[in-house]
Amino acid sequence: MNYADAIRFLYNLRWFGAKLGLENTFKLAALAGNPHERLRFIHVAGTNGKGSTCAMLEGIYRAAGLRVGLFTSPHLVAFGERIQVNRRLISEADIVRLVEDMQPWLRTFPASAHPTFFEVVTIMALRYFAEQRVDLVIWETGLGGRLDATNIVTPLASVITNIQFDHEKWLGHTLPEIAAEKAGIIKPRVPVVTAEESPEAWGVISQMAASHQSLLRQVTQADLDDPPLANLKLPLPGEHQRRNAALALATVRVLVDQIPVRADATEEGLLNVSWTGRLQIIRLPPGRTILLDGAHNPAGVQALRAAVEKLFPGRMTLIFGVMQDKNWQAMCRTLAPLASRLVLAPVSSERSAGPQAMREFCEQLDPSADIVACASLSDALHQTASDPRVLITGSLHFVGEAIEALRLSSSPALNERGLNEWTAVTELRGV
Image (cartoon, rainbow, N blue to C red; front, side, top):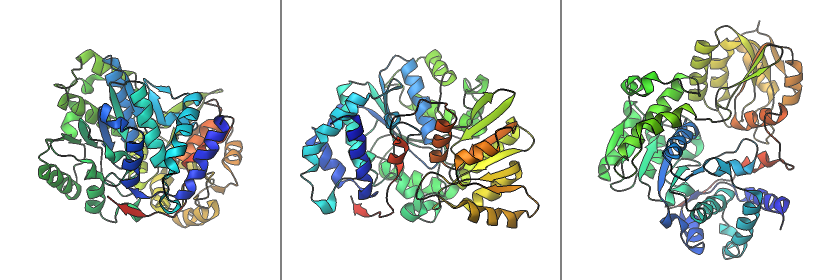
């Protein structure tokens, strides 16, 4: 097997969909020797800000001298982004080896209960982190929490960023229902840290923590004004990122007896944090600015709009591409006031919303608006090539496509962004 074969194998796993449940992951982990039992984790769930919070935690603990594993999803360009050690992507050779090792174990499953892409990748990550003898793994959920494949671990701390509407088809149609799924990562007597403040969701989280006899630490607006955060200029712009930083700091403090961290390491980690595609600012000649942000739900674009209005006052060109299963109508309503021109394009995905349908909706919002529907992102970039300020948003998949099109990252020989796809056949296997 070579690297192309390994990617092709992983790609074919998408046909098994996104089946929520822990039975397969526990079985695969046992076949792999239960590598998670030799590791320490901080488990991060929530609707928005998971990746940024994970990046901040990783940066702090790495600055403190630890060897840190980082598991996140989706990837923007290369599959290896999902599995990193000290911010070094897993090598192609290790991906091939781990995929080959999975083959005999996967054959023990009946076709009707074959592990999914995410379940397989979760076990690959656990094996890799155990082999690399990492001191700590920052461990992001994929979808939800309670039935997510990552939930086979017992972490040092459970972190819940916030609770917003997203993936309602699978997680529930009310904030308490969604909160219950996210709070499913809470384990007995394991501390919980959250930045959620809404009474509906907070009530669920606090009740779950109490039932598990888990210490609960809530991050509030006041934490954003405490040192050292009050005096730090974060590389990731926006008030929402300051809240993510406060959450990371609170987590570090909750765990200080188990993992001591010097104050200067905390500041160093936050001051050097990087997380691609989150209000990323690209300066291009002659004097052009392109903003990339993976906001992909109504709450995400509200945070994006607040940050853009503060940092870049005045209107700009907006290139927008989004998945059909998102509430793109609400996203358009929020973002439209930022746009001097609205350029709509499809995400390179079978789940993409149609630009023409989005155009018709946006024209109803403002019949006088300058709105263009494009056949592709490359067409949209061509049409806006001379615009001085451009914001590209709507989906992490879309931002990943833009990163490749703008040559901001070396592109893999294969289109590895396709690995983010999964079919619409989704089941609950139970726990």
